[in-house]
Amino acid sequence: MEFIVIFAYFALIIGIGYYFSRDVHDIDDFAVAGRKIVWPVLLASSATSMIGGGASVGTVAKAIESGAGYGICASAWYLSLVYTGIYIAPKLRGLNLTTYGEKFTTVGDLFAHKYGEFSRKWIGLVSFVFCIGIVAAQIVAIGGVLEAITNIPFVYCAIIGTVVVMIYSTLGGMASIMKVDVFQFLLLVFVFTGLAIYGLIEVGGYGALLEQVPQKFIGWTGALSTGKIISLFIAFFLGELLAPYFVQRMYAAKDESAAKYGITGAGLFMTAFLPITMITLGFIAIVTIPDIPADRTALVTLAKHMLPAPVVGLVVAAILACIMSSCSAILSSCSVIATKDFYERMSHNSDKRSLLKVGRISNIVIALISLVFAMFVPDVIDALLYAYAVWAPAAVIPIIYALSNSYSPLKAKGVIVSSILGSIASLGWTLSGQPYGLDAGVLGFLVALIVFIFHPKVEPAGSFKPLCLESEG
Amino acid sequence: MIATVYSILFGVGILAVIFVTISIVRVAFKK
Image (cartoon, rainbow over all chains, first blue to last red; front, side):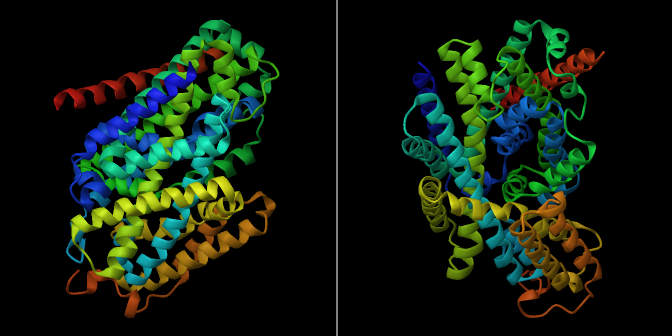
């Protein structure tokens, strides 16, 4: 019975993706949904992009393992979106700037405009590796969830999941993805809320629930130390701050206020909704199944324990919605980066219709490469995921500085040097096992910040010359 | 006491769900 529900869900999201793909006529529709997304759609899409396995089943597992504290740490992801929505999104969407006569589509466009063409290649490479590693990891997660519930071998599950994501993201790009995201958002929100309410009724409300949970779990830090919470909070805050798939969504907004309310709303909504709901589900799992393992299958195990098969299918569909929406968002970013930052710049082909074809082909190729990594070479995924800790050192300072009032072209080289050195420091720290419990992303960010502050201002030249100084800028 | 805090937080979460759902439905019907 679960099969029917899950495959009906797959058919539905492909159908929605196909329906909205009719609006896609060129690369702007494919990459930024024609820049006409209203704030509630942006909110739902940004939220589902951020809610992956870690924020959903991962938080439930952590609540079972160590109590409420991880929910506080996870809220750092959502608060980073609140910060982005208030301070970055309206500025970025409101930029009336172009590179080579075109409005910005990628992070690389902003970089090239403010720091020169070399910086586009640099951040394009970092974004691409950052994104493709996460896509492959999400495919592993999709395969794992499907395998657990259907008993179909992992390889086939990974193929099925990838093909579904690939179809709707290739057909309509962001135009389809953001509409599918709205459906997935409503599905996951209602299923998780319903499951938590049903579980609370079953155990007799919060009073009875909290009496049966280990008492050290229920305070705001849970079983974690305050130091651990602070370090995880900072690492999570920086982890996906200004990630390419959020920047892409800011460009897709209808106007500045849609960007502001959509992104800020997504952060506020998730802060209010997700940690408490997932911790509650974790506690319900502890009470109803005392020996439940603290891993990412815990939520499905709880659903199987409490609910009839068709409803379990819905819970699995909601978990898949979390993972597949993140996967499609990041896959789309990857293909847009490949098309706009690399193919278009190298081929000098700016025809928007032919770039749409390239975007679609890139999407398929990247999905298949990620699938191969997921099925056969998990070590490559581990290596690519090192880029996760590189994103914040490489991109956060340059983006914030590019949008600040104190921006100066004389600092262009310093910003990019700080970005590169911060990334190297982060990578080195990751490879040495992140000693002293210091997160590699945080260390790299600090190195980048120090280099940025102390690098002298120099006259920009060559590939460090910002496009805003060029006549065509 | 702590149960009341959890209840309030969960209630705020449900209110957020209702608010966002209404906003999305309004957009859908505007079209």
